[in-house]
Image 1 (cartoon, one colour):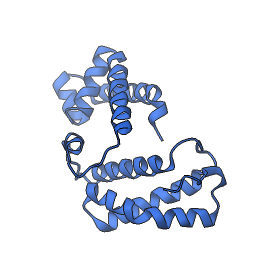
Image 2 (cartoon, one colour; image 1 turned 60 degrees about the horizontal axis):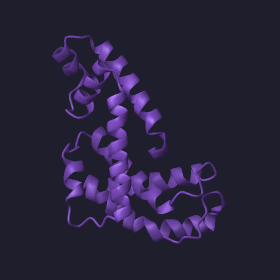
Image 3 (cartoon, helix red, strand yellow; image 1 turned 90 degrees about the vertical axis):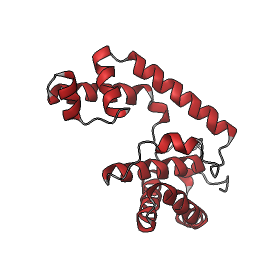
Image 4 (cartoon, one colour; image 1 turned 180 degrees about the vertical axis):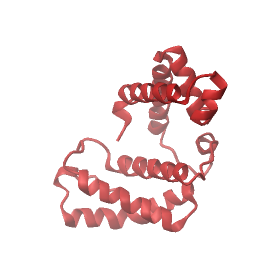
Length: 176
């Protein structure tokens, strides 16, 4: 990644250079998740399109390479979830993949994020936290949670909405 790219000042020529220099690597990165060449190309193109559309609103002090990597990763996870191909053990396995070349600073950020998620989760009211854990960690559907806890699906939806709002608020600085 060339360090002289500044997002708000990124013109079409610079954007084209950035796209050409990063597109292939990001497609390979996406392929590790989605295992589909066309889907990975589409994901990367969408990320670049969003970068271009949002370039003037983005923080120029943030790493462009980190933004692209995170955005592609998040889009891949969304793709897998939406296409019901998500392997719930993917996140655990990813940490132990010998092909991954994590920078030590990335591990520190990851540890910080995990800590912040744990703290935010602990702040949730007990029932709300229980519903959140069943949904996000045990991967139960709202209907399954409702049956398990003997509550209505609407209650599950309301509690999940509150939990997700709280998590978004507490983890705002890590969201794109």
